[in-house]
Each structure stands twice: as C-alpha cells, then as structure tokens.
Length: 302
Length: 167
Image (tube, rainbow over all chains, first blue to last red; front, top):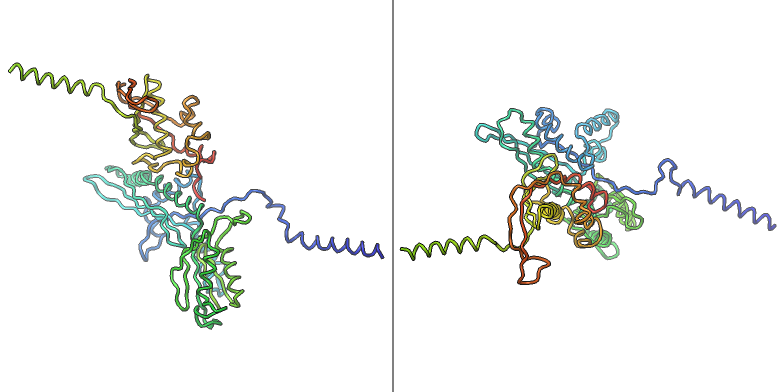
C-alpha cells in the first residue's frame, strides 16, 4: 500500500513537471540573459503638401533625395537605423496584394496597410536666390506620430553659392543643422527614458453597446470617473491627462507608460498597458474590443 | 603752450601705463569658428606661464566648455554632459576627471589641431589659488583648436557617461 502511494505521488509530480515545462520554458534558440530596449521606428520623408503623394515628391526631385539621404546618413552616424520610406511602402503594397480578394475592411487592416513609423522626420527644402547665386534652405521637423508631439525642429541654410550643383548646397544645408537637430531629439528621448513614453487611449461606445453612455454608474460611480481613477493609479508617475470626456467618448492623451516593466525590467509597451486597462473594464462587467496602432489605443465598449 | 604739451604727454603716458598691464579675471573664452566632417574648430584662450602650459590650458578649456556648456553657433551648442551627470559626478573621480587630467592628458586624443593664432601677451591675473590682493604675472595666448566630436561622443557613450542616440 505504501509503495502504491509513493509511486502514485511520483507519477503525479512527474506529470505536473511535464505540464509546466512547455509553458514556462523559453525556446533554446532565443535564450539570452540580456534585455535590449525596443527603439522607436524613425522614418525620414520629404515634406509633402496636402494632396501630394510623398513618393512622387521624392522621386521627382533628386536634390530632395540627396537631402533625405543626408539626414539618414546623420542618423547612421549616431549608430541609429532609420526605416526607409520607399521600402516600407513596397512592403505595404505587397501585403495588399497577398490579402487581395479577402474582405478585410475593418480598422485593423487599414492601420496595418498604412505602414508608418513612431517618429516621422520631415525634410522641407527650398532654393532661393541671393544676388546671382543660390541658397538651399531646409526645415527639419521631427514629430511623434501617435501624440503629435514635436521632438525637434531646425532650419538650415547652405552658404550663398553660384554653383549649379544644388545637390552640394543641399548637403551643406543639412550639415548646418542636423547635429543640433539630433541633439535636441535625443534630449527629448532622455525625458522619455526617465518619465515614460506618452501614449493615447481612446475609449468609445460601439453601436448597440450594453450601456447608453459613460455616465452609467457602476458601484455608485460613473464609468468615466472609474476610468479616470484607474489611470490616476496606473499611469507611470501619475502622469496622465484626460483630453476630453463626453457621454460617449473619452480621450486620455497623453498617458505615460515606462519603457521597461518596473516589476521585471522587460520591455513594456502600449499593447501590454492597454490589455491591463481592458481587463479592468471587463472586471466591471463590460464587453470590449481593443485596437492598438503603435502608441494609439482604441477601446470600444460593446 | 609748453605746459599744455606736457599735460598731453603726461595724459598719454598715463593711458599707456594703465593699458600696458591689464588686470583680467581668467575666464573660459571659447568661440566657434567652423566645423568640417564632424570636427569642431574653436578659438580658445590659454592662460599659463610658458608656451606649453598656454597650449595645454587652451585645449583643456575648449574640451571643458564643450562638455559642460556647449559651444554656441556650433553643432554642439548644448552641453555634451547632461546636467544630471554634472550634478552627480562633476569634480569626482571618474571618466571626466581622467579625461581632463593635466598629467594623463587623455583629452589630447580628441584634439585634431592646436595652433597659436596670436602672440603671447603678458597680463596680471587675479584668480584661483591667489591670496586676495596679490597678483601673479602670467601670459595669455589664443589658439585654434580642432575637436573630433564624433570620436569624443563615441568614447563617452562606450563609457556610459552619455546615452547613445535613442532610448
């Protein structure tokens, strides 16, 4: 009898081990003790007016291509890899070809097809005359795509020169301002490293939602108040802002989240943070749908 | 007429004597000239007693200003070292102290050019290390210094004094 029980216990323990191992074990091929912070995706593009196609603007003017390439070279010089606009566009088009024929018109597909980056650096250029010579002038603007925050802005001028080689002047104009541009941008990154990444969270009611408005009370408190209390408690360093709140919509922009999970120092992002928020809404008895596009989160209460 | 001439001569002599030995407070004077291929060229005043100390002082001052103040008009018009790092480590043993050490002269690794652009001038200087009211004669000379900024930045990133670009 004693032997039977000992054997049963042994088998139970072995079974438990077999069940837990595949869940907790990491793939041997990807094992590493180092954690590398996820870097922002930065894309350098030429400035395009409303209605203008960026690709057409870039391909129609070789001097603009030189200016864009010079900016990308400066990022490379700092050891940072940017994302090429044309290649990203080709990828997006290719994905479109593969999913052609399948009816996917929801927001998720549209966002995926847009491609894009966390930060766009726009290069606006102009040639003006100075006597019998030319000045090449550039405006560099770096903006966060999710929040619209301006990260860096610089104006650069080439020397006044009679050379017909405008490409050379374009390079001089970029050289005049790019290092300072990158320094200012990196200072903003210092703030992000210390005080968190700004993300935005849109909460709205879907068609036929189970509640009529965000003033609906749960545990004697309106949902909008419960939402704000959650962000007050969970925003990194209590840094959040309710941009607006109506009966059917609420925008929390920005709310700061850390780059690293403070409990285990792994990379942290808007997807993980918004998942926790979604779980909270679900704990209130609400059904939700969540869409995440980089640092923009859209939560729909169904 | 004779008296008037004497007064004018006396006045001119007085002006000459006052300006012959100006008393200046030593201060960092680093002015941006231009930059090429990432190297920043500046004019820096060196204070010392001979041509070697003058040059060392000018080079050290240029690097120090770049680290703690930035150089207006240049591609590094913000301090290279953050205010936070300065508050924690300035004056304490560490990378910056080694870099600026007068004996080791590590900062010279990042100097690409160091040429005098003015002649040595004698001045009377009131400054650190002097007892109030006493003066020690010294010299001043301006140098054109070239600093290899990308190389200095990479070295500081490798030694975790500054963050690399990005998060």
